[in-house]
Image (cartoon, rainbow, N blue to C red; front, side, top):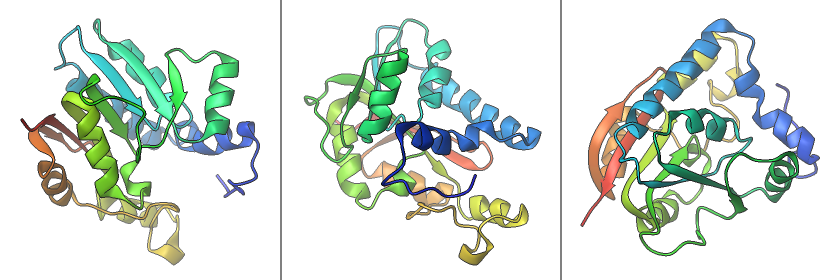
Length: 210
Protein backbone atom coordinates (compact mmCIF):
# COMPACT_ATOMS: atom_id res chain seq x y z
CA UNK A 1 0.00 0.00 0.00
CA UNK A 2 1.43 3.46 -0.89
CA UNK A 3 2.40 5.72 2.00
CA UNK A 4 -0.07 8.32 3.26
CA UNK A 5 0.17 11.59 5.15
CA UNK A 6 -0.62 10.02 8.51
CA UNK A 7 -0.75 13.34 10.34
CA UNK A 8 -3.54 14.64 8.12
CA UNK A 9 -5.27 11.43 7.06
CA UNK A 10 -8.95 10.92 7.78
CA UNK A 11 -9.86 8.17 10.25
CA UNK A 12 -11.02 6.01 7.34
CA UNK A 13 -7.77 6.56 5.42
CA UNK A 14 -5.75 5.75 8.50
CA UNK A 15 -7.72 2.55 9.09
CA UNK A 16 -7.30 1.44 5.48
CA UNK A 17 -3.56 2.12 5.65
CA UNK A 18 -3.05 0.09 8.83
CA UNK A 19 -5.26 -2.70 7.54
CA UNK A 20 -3.12 -3.03 4.41
CA UNK A 21 -1.01 -5.90 5.73
CA UNK A 22 -4.13 -7.88 6.62
CA UNK A 23 -5.66 -7.34 3.18
CA UNK A 24 -2.62 -8.59 1.28
CA UNK A 25 -3.97 -10.69 -1.64
CA UNK A 26 -0.83 -12.83 -1.72
CA UNK A 27 -1.82 -16.30 -0.39
CA UNK A 28 1.62 -16.85 1.17
CA UNK A 29 1.41 -13.57 3.07
CA UNK A 30 -2.04 -14.49 4.32
CA UNK A 31 -0.82 -17.92 5.39
CA UNK A 32 2.05 -16.40 7.35
CA UNK A 33 -0.32 -14.00 9.10
CA UNK A 34 -2.67 -16.84 9.97
CA UNK A 35 0.23 -18.80 11.45
CA UNK A 36 1.21 -15.77 13.50
CA UNK A 37 -2.22 -15.68 15.12
CA UNK A 38 -2.22 -19.44 15.65
CA UNK A 39 1.03 -19.04 17.60
CA UNK A 40 -0.35 -16.09 19.57
CA UNK A 41 -3.39 -18.21 20.34
CA UNK A 42 -1.21 -20.96 21.74
CA UNK A 43 0.22 -18.51 24.27
CA UNK A 44 -3.25 -17.22 25.15
CA UNK A 45 -4.51 -20.80 25.57
CA UNK A 46 -2.17 -21.22 28.56
CA UNK A 47 -3.99 -18.49 30.49
CA UNK A 48 -6.62 -19.42 33.11
CA UNK A 49 -10.25 -18.87 32.13
CA UNK A 50 -10.82 -16.17 34.76
CA UNK A 51 -8.00 -13.90 33.53
CA UNK A 52 -8.59 -10.29 32.49
CA UNK A 53 -6.65 -9.42 29.33
CA UNK A 54 -5.73 -6.01 27.93
CA UNK A 55 -4.40 -5.50 24.41
CA UNK A 56 -2.33 -2.33 24.05
CA UNK A 57 -2.00 -0.67 20.63
CA UNK A 58 -4.80 -2.49 18.83
CA UNK A 59 -4.39 -0.28 15.74
CA UNK A 60 -6.99 -1.11 13.09
CA UNK A 61 -8.59 -3.66 15.42
CA UNK A 62 -7.89 -6.77 13.35
CA UNK A 63 -5.75 -8.37 16.06
CA UNK A 64 -8.49 -7.82 18.63
CA UNK A 65 -11.06 -9.47 16.41
CA UNK A 66 -8.78 -12.44 15.81
CA UNK A 67 -8.01 -12.86 19.50
CA UNK A 68 -11.65 -12.85 20.61
CA UNK A 69 -12.53 -16.33 19.25
CA UNK A 70 -9.45 -17.75 21.01
CA UNK A 71 -10.72 -16.87 24.47
CA UNK A 72 -12.02 -19.60 26.74
CA UNK A 73 -13.72 -17.53 29.39
CA UNK A 74 -11.12 -14.77 29.67
CA UNK A 75 -12.29 -11.16 29.32
CA UNK A 76 -10.61 -8.79 26.86
CA UNK A 77 -10.26 -5.03 26.67
CA UNK A 78 -8.20 -2.92 24.27
CA UNK A 79 -6.62 0.49 23.92
CA UNK A 80 -5.04 2.52 21.15
CA UNK A 81 -2.96 5.70 21.12
CA UNK A 82 -4.39 7.18 17.91
CA UNK A 83 -7.60 8.98 18.87
CA UNK A 84 -8.89 8.96 15.28
CA UNK A 85 -8.85 5.18 15.22
CA UNK A 86 -10.50 4.96 18.64
CA UNK A 87 -13.31 7.26 17.52
CA UNK A 88 -13.76 5.30 14.29
CA UNK A 89 -13.88 1.97 16.10
CA UNK A 90 -16.41 3.24 18.62
CA UNK A 91 -18.61 4.70 15.88
CA UNK A 92 -18.66 1.32 14.14
CA UNK A 93 -19.23 -0.74 17.25
CA UNK A 94 -16.01 -2.25 18.59
CA UNK A 95 -16.39 -5.79 20.00
CA UNK A 96 -14.61 -5.10 23.32
CA UNK A 97 -14.28 -2.11 25.69
CA UNK A 98 -11.86 0.34 24.05
CA UNK A 99 -10.04 3.44 25.30
CA UNK A 100 -7.34 5.86 24.20
CA UNK A 101 -3.98 5.80 25.96
CA UNK A 102 -0.24 5.80 25.41
CA UNK A 103 1.84 2.74 26.16
CA UNK A 104 4.28 5.15 27.80
CA UNK A 105 1.69 6.18 30.42
CA UNK A 106 -1.05 3.58 30.81
CA UNK A 107 -4.14 4.81 32.66
CA UNK A 108 -4.17 1.68 34.81
CA UNK A 109 -3.34 0.70 38.36
CA UNK A 110 -0.47 -1.61 39.24
CA UNK A 111 -1.39 -5.28 38.62
CA UNK A 112 -4.81 -4.25 37.25
CA UNK A 113 -4.93 -6.88 34.50
CA UNK A 114 -3.78 -10.48 34.63
CA UNK A 115 -2.13 -10.40 31.19
CA UNK A 116 -1.24 -7.64 28.74
CA UNK A 117 -0.72 -8.14 25.00
CA UNK A 118 1.47 -5.92 22.83
CA UNK A 119 1.53 -7.25 19.27
CA UNK A 120 3.56 -5.58 16.51
CA UNK A 121 4.10 -2.34 18.42
CA UNK A 122 7.56 -2.33 20.04
CA UNK A 123 9.40 -2.08 16.73
CA UNK A 124 7.76 1.34 16.23
CA UNK A 125 8.60 2.85 19.63
CA UNK A 126 11.36 5.32 20.41
CA UNK A 127 11.32 4.57 24.15
CA UNK A 128 11.16 0.80 24.53
CA UNK A 129 12.28 0.82 28.16
CA UNK A 130 9.43 3.04 29.34
CA UNK A 131 6.89 0.99 27.39
CA UNK A 132 8.09 -2.31 28.85
CA UNK A 133 8.16 -0.84 32.32
CA UNK A 134 4.50 0.17 31.98
CA UNK A 135 3.45 -3.22 30.62
CA UNK A 136 5.03 -5.15 33.45
CA UNK A 137 3.70 -2.63 35.99
CA UNK A 138 0.07 -3.12 34.93
CA UNK A 139 0.31 -6.89 34.37
CA UNK A 140 -0.31 -9.01 37.46
CA UNK A 141 0.72 -12.33 35.90
CA UNK A 142 2.25 -12.06 32.42
CA UNK A 143 2.81 -10.20 29.15
CA UNK A 144 2.62 -11.52 25.58
CA UNK A 145 4.64 -9.55 23.03
CA UNK A 146 5.57 -9.91 19.38
CA UNK A 147 8.05 -8.20 17.06
CA UNK A 148 9.48 -8.91 13.60
CA UNK A 149 12.29 -11.46 13.68
CA UNK A 150 15.32 -9.67 12.25
CA UNK A 151 17.12 -9.80 9.94
CA UNK A 152 14.69 -12.35 8.44
CA UNK A 153 11.94 -9.73 8.22
CA UNK A 154 14.07 -7.39 6.12
CA UNK A 155 15.45 -10.22 3.99
CA UNK A 156 11.92 -11.30 3.07
CA UNK A 157 10.95 -7.70 2.27
CA UNK A 158 14.02 -7.37 0.08
CA UNK A 159 13.30 -10.64 -1.75
CA UNK A 160 9.78 -9.50 -2.60
CA UNK A 161 11.10 -6.22 -3.96
CA UNK A 162 10.01 -4.00 -1.08
CA UNK A 163 11.93 -1.10 0.50
CA UNK A 164 15.17 -1.74 -1.35
CA UNK A 165 16.44 1.78 -0.65
CA UNK A 166 16.19 1.01 3.08
CA UNK A 167 17.59 -2.52 2.77
CA UNK A 168 14.20 -4.08 3.34
CA UNK A 169 13.32 -2.11 6.46
CA UNK A 170 9.59 -1.49 6.74
CA UNK A 171 8.81 2.24 7.12
CA UNK A 172 8.25 3.10 10.76
CA UNK A 173 10.34 0.27 12.17
CA UNK A 174 12.94 1.93 14.37
CA UNK A 175 13.92 -1.14 16.43
CA UNK A 176 15.24 -4.46 15.17
CA UNK A 177 15.73 -7.62 17.21
CA UNK A 178 16.67 -11.18 16.41
CA UNK A 179 14.74 -13.77 18.40
CA UNK A 180 17.70 -14.20 20.74
CA UNK A 181 18.06 -10.45 21.27
CA UNK A 182 14.35 -10.02 21.93
CA UNK A 183 14.28 -12.85 24.46
CA UNK A 184 17.24 -11.27 26.25
CA UNK A 185 15.47 -7.90 26.33
CA UNK A 186 12.20 -9.23 27.73
CA UNK A 187 14.12 -11.44 30.16
CA UNK A 188 15.27 -8.27 31.93
CA UNK A 189 11.64 -7.54 32.84
CA UNK A 190 10.02 -10.93 33.23
CA UNK A 191 10.55 -14.67 33.39
CA UNK A 192 10.35 -16.23 29.92
CA UNK A 193 7.87 -19.11 29.77
CA UNK A 194 7.56 -19.55 26.00
CA UNK A 195 9.15 -18.36 22.77
CA UNK A 196 7.60 -18.95 19.36
CA UNK A 197 9.03 -18.00 15.99
CA UNK A 198 6.32 -18.16 13.33
CA UNK A 199 8.03 -16.82 10.21
CA UNK A 200 8.92 -13.94 10.27
CA UNK A 201 8.03 -12.98 13.86
CA UNK A 202 9.07 -13.63 17.44
CA UNK A 203 6.39 -14.07 20.09
CA UNK A 204 7.44 -14.09 23.75
CA UNK A 205 5.27 -14.90 26.77
CA UNK A 206 6.84 -13.80 30.05
CA UNK A 207 5.55 -13.81 33.62
CA UNK A 208 6.04 -10.84 35.92
CA UNK A 209 9.03 -11.10 38.23
CA UNK A 210 8.13 -11.25 41.91
